[in-house]
Amino acid sequence: MLVDYIKKYKNIEVITYDLGIAYSLSDFENIKTYLLGGYVDRKTRTLSSIDGLENLSRLHADICFMGTDAYDEKFVYSTSEKKGKNKKKND
Image 1 (cartoon, rainbow, N blue to C red):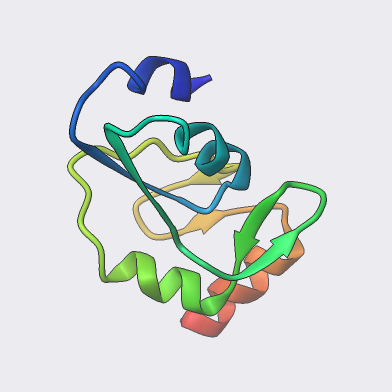
Image 2 (cartoon, helix red, strand yellow; image 1 turned 90 degrees about the vertical axis):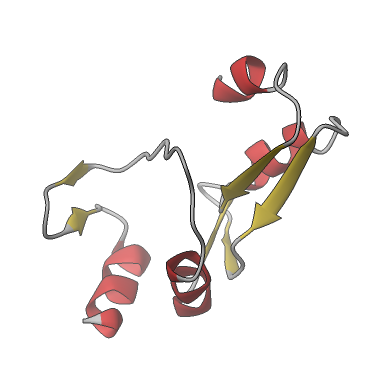
């Protein structure tokens, strides 16, 4: 898991919508963790909402580790119905 790799670094901030990642990182004082916000998806244990997407658009990251089904320069594709609805509302 990526958490095992980044926990050794000092003074970093992590932006995530994943509750498991946030929980794992909460053990480390050297890592600040920011949850984007939204409703909890019980299957994936992630947060999802228009507000979360808007929060993300206001943040800057030096490095991004992104999980998705597919993406190109114009669009991020997901098989999640909820995430698909969120993307359509932002267009």
